[in-house]
Structure formats: C-alpha cells, structure tokens
Image (tube, rainbow, N blue to C red; front, side, top):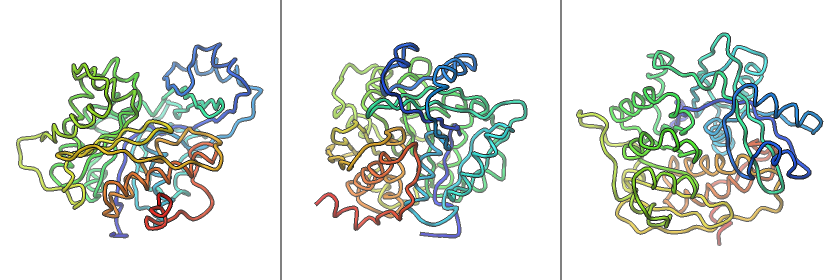
Length: 364
C-alpha cells in the first residue's frame, strides 16, 4: 500500500460521545428510549437527558459513526494519516478537544469549523450488553457544498475508497452526490453505511436511490428491512434482500464513462452487501454469487457495544484495502468489533492489533 497518501476518506457527523453505564432501565423508561436504539433530539431535549444522568459516572471520547471507523482503522493499519475525515465542527472547547484526540489517533481531519454552533454530541447509555444513543448534532448537522473545497476534492481524488455514513447523507445529499461524481471520475470505490433505521422515515426514497450507485452497502438487519420497505419490496428475509441488492449491480451517476475502480478485489466482486446482526452470523452477498454467513467472534467480556458496528466496518474496509478475500474482510471486521466492545466507547485499545493472517487463525 502507498504510505505517502491517505488510503481512505470518510464523510460523517463528528460528535463528542458521553458514555454512561446505567444500573437499571429507569432512565430509558423515563425518556421513552429502547435498548439498542438511536435518536436525534433538540438541544432542549438533550440538555434534559443530560440533567437526568448528572449523578452517573461519565467517560468522554470522540464519536460519530465514520469518525469511529477511521480511528479504529488507524489502529489496525498502524500508519499515521492513512485516512482523512471530513465533517462539520463547532468552534468551542469540546470541538478543540475532539480535534486534538482525532489527530492523536492518526486521522488526518479536515473539519469545517462553524462559528456560532456547538460541536455535536451524543449520550451513550450503556445498559447491560446494550447501548442507546441520543444525539444533538449541532455543527455536525451542517456541511454545505461550498464547505467541500477544491483542496478537499483534490485530496479525496487520490484515495482508493470513500466511506459515507447515512447520518451525513440525511443533511448533505447535494455534497454526497458530488462525492459520487468525483469517485466515478477517479475510480474510487464507495462504501455506504445505512446507519439508523429511523432515517428512512424521512429519507427512504433518497437512500434507496443512493444505494443503487455505491459499491458496498453495510448495515444491520433492521436497517435493511427499512430499506426493503422503501424499495417497495415485501420480503422480510434479509438473505433475500441482500442478494437482490447485490444482483441489482451499480448504476452510474453521470453519463460520462466512469473509471474502473482501483481495488482489484472489489472490482471482481462488483456490488457487495453486508448485514450485521449482533451476535448472529454476518450475512454477506456479492453480485453474481450466493450469499454466505460468517460467525462472529465471542469476546472474553463485554464493556460497551457502542462502537461494535463502526469497528466492524473498520476491519472490513482494512481487508478490502489489503486485497483480502470477501470472507477474510468479514473476519477482519469481526475481529475488530470483538476488540472494541471490550473498551468503553469506540476507543482503540492500547495494544497492537493482529494482522490478517493472525486473525484468520481465530476462525480455525
């Protein structure tokens, strides 16, 4: 791999995560929150919840789906600045702390700092093996076409893979379509995370359209059921849904002939669909090939599942960039998720990650 340039860029909502372990479900019940759910709220609603958990022990760390993924990716890759992140940040103390820790993790960040807006934040409520996210996006909710500068485009044009979270697409669709046109022109693979079934309530048709144009789609089973509903499909069989999306292939965004993508393994697989299902086996399908399942790795203990999905994506993308087989990519993702859920927050461990050959032995 070329160590002089970023391998991957990601677009997302940078957040400051406040992780809180709950002794019972009383706070969840009071605010009408379900285990393992995600929700965006107003500043007033967020402040009300923050007051309700004032007496609990808290741990803060950088968060946001795509940012979590890149921080874990850096841990796996061990090469500083092999990833670049873009998103909106507030000009406040929390934003400065977040930016500092992102830099320390080895991620090259190109934040658009918005004056007068607070840095987005999320309360992560840990209840047993479940986590519930309540976010107020603040500055993370703002990323306009003019914020994606010519210098940004030049940097992104040199990567091999672009990762986009649905949270970002929901507020900046025009930017995402511009990113897709850029990727087509330079042979860059596009990975899209469905990230949040509630997003389909307002943006279902737009999300379904975007899915047709990307190389890899990742999400959990509830998100794929929401996608199927938005597509007008009646099936609730996630394997069938995965195969249907994969075999529908990839549609071009523009009429200009697009460049072949730079990644040989992904070029061979064409369209890839990955469905995570908690402790159940991962479902994976690719265009023209039958779907398959991969068992997840069981951790020695679980501290916090907040970043499990984001960590899985980091390992999966790492596998793609290392020219691994599709099964090996899923295995790398499972390993990455297992290590992260043994930490509080989506925090890379303070020990060296295994390489792909060592990870493969974990599945023997």
